[in-house]
Length: 157
Image (cartoon, rainbow, N blue to C red; front, side, top):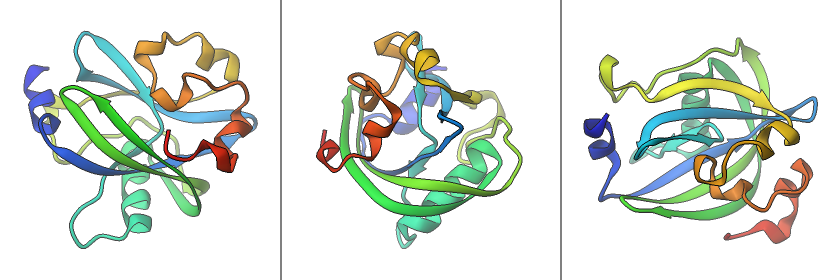
């Protein structure tokens, strides 16, 4: 999977991510090969293309990664993700599922043998807490309650 990492490393990216909670469970995508020697659980989302609105990006990324159609909601917070060799400025939005069927998606910019999404699923807080810190997005490291993701003080982590 080393080639997959090369696609993203050494570049500052702007990413748009969605926080989707249903029945007290958070929707997450597990990526393999994104970080060396470990899985990485994060909210669905991805890179903003030049000329693309953040709402369009979020809808596209959710459909690609999860098979779900969504309605972007309010802006929640911004996060700087810096785990060399990866660096991104991430914009997080609340999202509501409007259609589609949950399934493991793909990254169209990657070849079939380089695909990184290994699972998409809803996790409750207990399941999320059992994922090792190094294997989950930093926005979840101090999480005590899923509602904490919607508190305004959670800006620019």
